[in-house]
Picture (cartoon, rainbow, N blue to C red):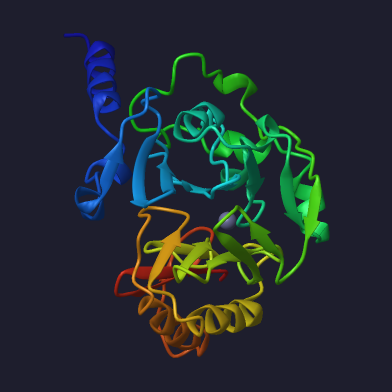
Amino acid sequence: MHLVAILFAILASQSDQKPEWCRDLPRPAYSKLERVTVADKWFEVYRIRPGLFAIYEPHQQEEIISYLIVGKKQALLFDTGMGISNIKKVVERLTTLPVSVMNSHTHNDHVSDNWRFSRIYGMDTAFTREHAKGTVAAAQEEIVPGAICGAPPAGFDPKTYSVKPFHITDWIHDGAKIDLGGRVLQVISTPGHTPDSISLWDAQNKLLFTGDMYYPGAIFLFRPETDLDAYEASIKKMSALGAVLLLPAHNVPVADPADLPRVLAAIKQARSGKMKPIKAEHWSEYKFDGFSFLLSK
Ligand SMILES: [Zn+2]
């Protein structure tokens, strides 16, 4: 074989391999969850509680999770995911009620299908207003080689992939309550990861949707919009709620509320300067049992 041909053969065999991040999927937590079949293979849907669905996108590195919370009169979609396939179609399979959108925060991986919906709640912050304008760059970074595991959905065009602008119809603040009919959700402002980060609190069922403030995995806290003092204060606030279940926005849709006091102690330790991080190009990683923090260097 000619040397160039050998090289091509090696490259071809490597491209057949799965990217490292998805080799060990599915994560163990999923085997205990009730799967709901949907037509679109891009998504996996799990029923976490009656009227509460996790909509997971396991074929892209973010492993983003959006949540559909269904009341008697309306439903709320908490985040809309990557926009690589059509989350609205999945939601319409799960409920016939009117669906509003609210975001855990407005980073691209949580808002990319917002544009498909007509009623969108948004936190009244400058950060939210800016991010509602959409972005091409942040979206394109999500589809670099190795970021997608397997094939993207039919009809997906990587060249035109972007976060389309979306229109916020209802501006909200800390403490806002959304009544879905027999189910009330409270907005809790929990800035830190971004200024517009919220947690959603279902007080009746003691469920806490944590967005990117906490998930089991590497938590991104190195961007300019991150405020670590605010992060600490928000984790403390979340920890005090007495949740029985956390529903995070990445990796797994169920996490133990006992993680929150550990996260609080860990962030203090990471910030103390007494711990040795693992340095990478864009961040320093501080590892703990079940999660890590990516802090700026
Ligand atoms: Zn984020």
